[in-house]
Length: 167
Image 1 (cartoon, rainbow, N blue to C red):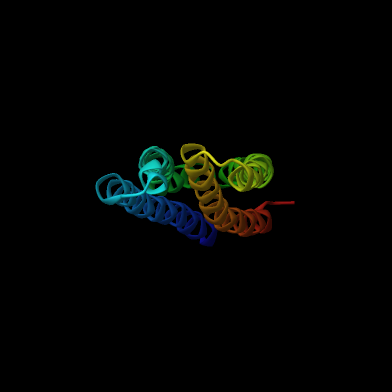
Image 2: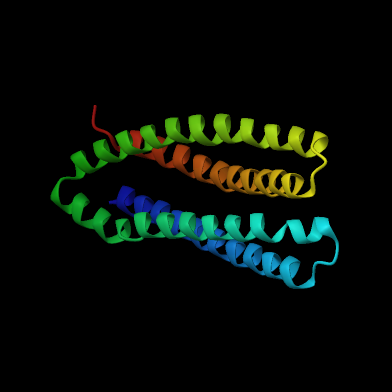
């Protein structure tokens, strides 16, 4: 029965991550509004659109993460009651796939995007392009930070699930 409690805690951790992303998205949208209304220089005025779109993107990510994981809190209990062994097998498969997806998308593709944006920000002198590069670099770094926490939580959950798998 301990594994179901651990599974629910994992889902709650994902919901917490969604709330953190939502909070940051509000901050990013407020920054976009600040740059739009208070920006005096061309560089400051160039930030509002990339920040606004990044804020909207983060709202979508937070919503997707929340609505994908919040229902799991109750569905985990139902699935576990029906067939505990199958529940553990399904979760092992899902966490394995999630780890490979995180490795490919977040820690390879997103890393290349952040590096490309850093190089672009160093060499491109047009203010609008530089603002886009800097905001995308910030967005990528933030998502990598959140997903590194997700990856660690996923790895710990996967290891815990393996202990409960019958031989």
